[in-house]
Length: 212
Image (cartoon, rainbow, N blue to C red; front, side):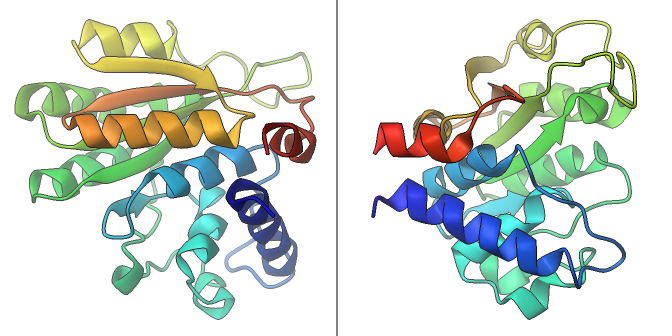
């Protein structure tokens, strides 16, 4: 079995188990599995990983025990997994701080996060100080059934480029595309913004098998 298919299966199995026991409440990862798996496969074990509540189940790929993940607000310091923050965008600033301390750090964000002022502050600080920080922004297309309408006045890729940051757009349904983009950005050093565009109708396992 290929590494990326095994990673996808581990995340989906862990998500199913945690959905019954998560605290304070379950936040299913459905639709983001390829982004999370690709991110962790592209990083080194010693790099800081800064997920949100939805992405955090992916910590099983770093062999974090499921019992450690039942409390969704706790971190896993020995595994370099940062705890989620009350504000989704605030974790972008935390990731910049971790990178300024001499680490490589990757933070998961969404359009809601990108509309928050803390995200803009994080991009500005990253542009000024040039730490090894990767902002991985998952972009969901908004349909008529979306619970929240448009939240950002521009595309996040345009926003990142306005700050002079290296920006890559990629297929968020492909673990390999995410993995390769993360690894390349990590090896290049400095700040990068990775825009993972999602297809809500994609069969992630079928995509993974086709790429095997």
